[in-house]
Length: 256
Image (tube, rainbow, N blue to C red; front, top):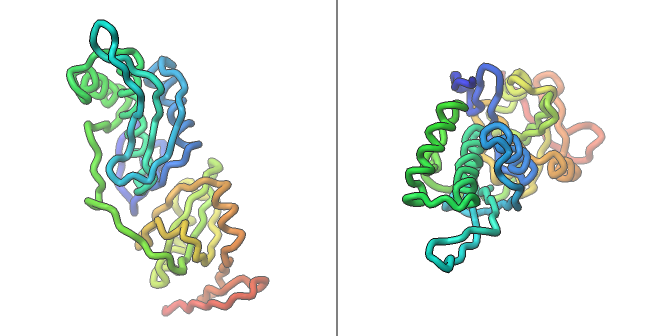
């Protein structure tokens, strides 16, 4: 059984797991679907297409077609599970969002008639899953920030963290915190090593700059592509400079 433990930065540390902030990828959504299908739904759900959306109005959504049956009622088909990439969220919330939509999928794919979209059947299943699997699924999710923020593209200092389990994450760091974060991020549970870069790619402008250690999980292949044009940084004593083999110039001095 998992239990919520004290929050450090915005990564969630539990007795046997670390939950990072992240933006959904198709690979992640599909992997979690199969994991929860086996663990929670006993393999009852058929595979379905997965989609990503930039929508601001939802975190997850089950899309489908419906047609009126001859003797009344609706028949549901052509399901798709959609997850928004418009905001970052902690991994635990993303998992709960996927399970939320899987409950909808279970009800509609089995042609069960509920009292409403989140009616008696949905609430009963949600309550049982929360109890039996220590989840925190709710009827609806709201952005912790109460809305979305737009980011202008800029030069970003990026820490790329490679985790022991093979995943990759990024942290955007303000220049005022770079020396502190250079020391602190490698100490986070699950982090094998960290590399540092400067980048102006707009991909990174979707992430908030962090004043405390936090890691946003990203697609490993996408990160490899992005780093081809990034400027590597190295630390030389109390200075952080561009790697010597790179022609760009940048130097940050530790005020201490």
